[in-house]
Image (cartoon, rainbow over all chains, first blue to last red; front, top):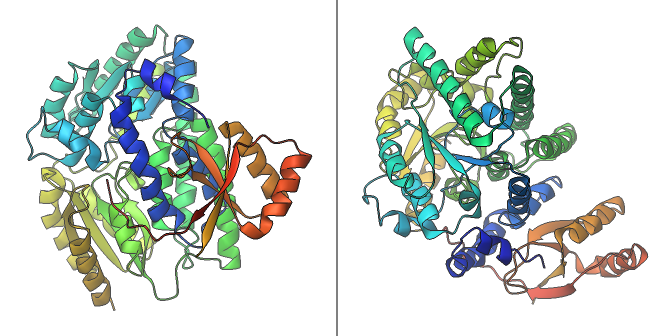
Length: 423
Length: 83
């Protein structure tokens, strides 16, 4: 067996504590993923990535660092990967989706903030995430108060740079965001010692667009009436997109999509006739947060899309590839990223429109609004989303939860009642 | 009692070589995280159907693919606990 202990030790990890995580993950993955019937063969690649999640990719990051390369961690879909790649660095979207890290996070953070923030802090403090340990710098952003203040604490443990994301979408906000992207460019050049040239940035824009197109293709396959892939498998692919090697990810996801399109033609499906089609909308689901998808798909429904940061918000809208000057490309990046409709913006009518559009495109029978505990922006925004969905005649169920196992039974009961109500 | 069958490897590259050959020979397999009961090291294993064992052994022999071990585990319905 591959032994990565030496590498983990070098990264300053707490091996004993990390071993506890290694012990429970295969069982959770087995129960949630490997127990599914009729999975596409192409999912073997993603099984492989999960099996090697703290191994092969970490080794690749280590090899990159040995050659003087830098690794940069992110937590939000607003941070432009294009700049990280153009600077010759590797970007990893860090997970923060496990209850395992909450206790350590609460050592320095209040209990009544969102589990994602507590988990990322705990992951760093406990030294149990080799991705976090590989990072030379973290790029934070100002998408919520909890994150904003947590960066100040995290900076004591790892160099943390913060992008100031505007919270409105006026012309002056657009200009400010473009300036923020320029500042990040300078910061990354300083960190890596590499100049981000127009050519390199253009290449990176094209690469990230190709990744978005592959994910769009995957999601398009889920629009079929005979759904060729489960929601939880699609969620896993989105989650892996954040840290896998982009070229390899694009190649393997396109291969899987070939298979999915073939399955659609042949009518091979993961759902049974009459299974309800659910759109999940709300807060991000980081690895290994597969809870809501598992509950829904174990209740005789299929998740057909996610209006989340680990779903459509990550890949909708491409960056315009026509500008080739630095100013033009930075503006094109600012344009694309500001089209993301996150609940941190006010007003945020665009998100209501997105949910209604997606529910129609994916022929969803209902929407489950999934909100992490203490996520004020998404929680408060539900009032208007509910109203808009009601007017559009789309049923919706609100679930507020964290990563723990405690409320699984309760959520299951509510989901089953909701599905029954859908008829 | 029902059993699941696994092949363990020294490195993931060996596992991928075998996976490729199994695919070429239309033998059903699943790449899985190595079950904890079989090894404490992380990494991949290949889960296969018992009826294919002879064919798989032939492929391993023919292509001189390095494997660490072959194991069976009693199939249990384990409770899922989110972490």
